[in-house]
Amino acid sequence: MRDAIAFISNQKDPAAINDNVNFFFGPDIAFTCWAKMGLYDAEFDGVKPWYAKIPRVQCMDGFVLITEALKGGDGLDVLVCLESTTMVKLKELYANIDYLQD
Image 1 (tube, rainbow, N blue to C red):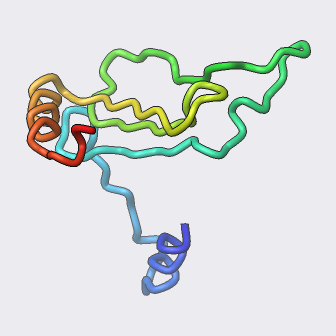
Image 2: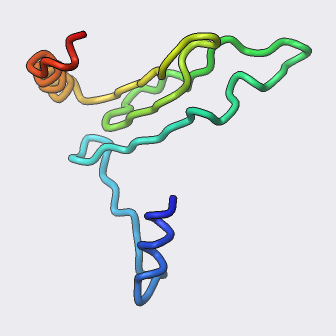
């Protein structure tokens, strides 16, 4: 957030800034993080959720969502939505990085 604010404040014409994102079937990827947002603190009729996720959407190419792990779990859940050939490339890359194989 600080970097975004600094970037905007350093522009001569902030109104000219645009996101220029092309992630659905394009070369870009959109990342969003919902960790530490209290997803499991909500209460519905006295019941708190044990898992929160986004609904399944057809055509979610180029999207990464990071959330807290299942309630009570450690770490993070990461949802990666990529076009199928790109996903194959990511799997191959992952398989060739030794420190990710723990």
